[in-house]
Each structure stands twice: as C-alpha cells, then as structure tokens.
Length: 299
Image (cartoon, rainbow, N blue to C red; front, side, top):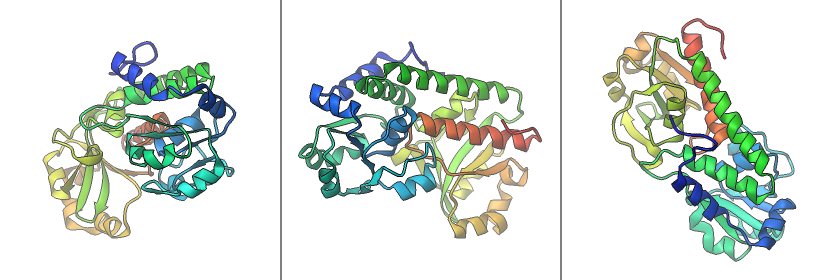
C-alpha cells in the first residue's frame, strides 16, 4: 500500500514541486483566479481544491465520462484535448496554464500565451497515485492554500481506508477491471494505472498479471478473460450499444466463467486518467458493486 501525507516518495514530491514552480507574477495570477487547465486530471484537482479555472477542454465529454467534481457554468470550453483552441485561450489572458505530460505537446503554443506548468502523472510502468498526490499538494501551494491541499489528500486516504475495511470480509478478492472497446475487445487495467492502483488501495488483487500498453490497459479479445475464472469482472461504462447487446445475449460473453457464476457488474463511467476524485469515484463504484453481489447494502 502506498504512502500518504508524510510518506510521499521523495522522487514524486520533488517532481511535483519542480513542475509547480511558478514565477511570482504567475503565482499571483493563479491565486487571483486567472488560470486555465488543459488536462482533466488537473481539472478534477483544482475543483476538488475549491478553485475554478477560466477554461478547460472537452467539458461536455468530461460531464459524461468523468462526471465529478461538477464543473461550474462559468468555465469556458477550450475544445478537444488534442486540438485545443489557442485563440480562445489567448482571449482569456490567463496568468498561468496547468497541464500534464499528456498535454505537453501544446507547450510551444501555450507558452506564447502564458507560463505553462506540467506534471508527469501517467508514466508506463509507474503507479500514478504518488505523483497525483504530489501534484495536488503542489497546486495547493501555488494557490496559497497548502492546508486545503493536505486536507484533500488526507480525506482521500481516509475514504479509501474506510472502503477497504468495508470490503475486508467479502469472498472475492481478485478483480478484473476493464472497459469495452467493441463487442469483441476490452481494455484491461494493469497495476500501473490509476484504476489498478485504486484496487490495491481497497485491499483487492488485480487479477490481470499480463503486460500493459498505452493507457496502462492491454487491448485483448474477450476470450482472454476466460483465463481468470475466479475473478470478479467489472466493466467500467459507458458500454457501446453493440457491445451492450453482445454482453446481454452473446454466447461468448455468457460463457465467460465470471459472468456465468454471477461475478460480474457494469459500473458508471469514471475517468481512467483522472486524479484523486477519479480514484475515489472508482472506489465507491467498485465497493458498491462487490457488496451488492454478496447481497449487502452498498457502501
């Protein structure tokens, strides 16, 4: 189990502090509310800290896939994460812009508008939670609300510990966590994903022992899931309509040992590349699904 406040790895903490170092002028702009974010993990985090950015990308899709924290109506949409509207960003005149390594491609365009600070959050082969916690604390420091940052991190630790205790006595400990690409393929979340590390925080075992690819999830045919007959299979929504029909009626899906034995659930959408709010949302959804499968009241 990874550490929390006071136990963040030196590497993650130094990376977070280095990434968050801003000029005094940019820091004042951030503290006054004149900042933007171009990554959903950063969007989740500033909202959890009680801060509201001028703008962020793909807000309609965020509300459907990430869901929470709720975005105030005052936040403007910067377009696609992979095709940001730099013109709109320039018109807003932010004092600083925050992003992750996934948005580093936009550095030349953004730095022509405002200082651009990025955090290395998702790195293949490296569990992300330590980096996410360090980023949360560093952002709070930038905005002069270090205490709030510590509170958010400590609150996440406490909530995960509570859910871990709720799950301590369930029969099924092995979990396969997937999302559905199409009727015949899924992406399985490995130990180096936010989802995989959240399972570990809940005291569960990630049944997937295979390798991972981009997004810390290995695209596989659904027949590969049959190799884990004792695992509880959890599908993270949304599920494409053709796949939903196949999951309901398809012989291959119904023949999977986990599905045939009733160790199967579909949960609401959650942001696989989010931050602490996404980890907590997933923890709530997974806990409720596992307890419901055993006939217990949801957590």
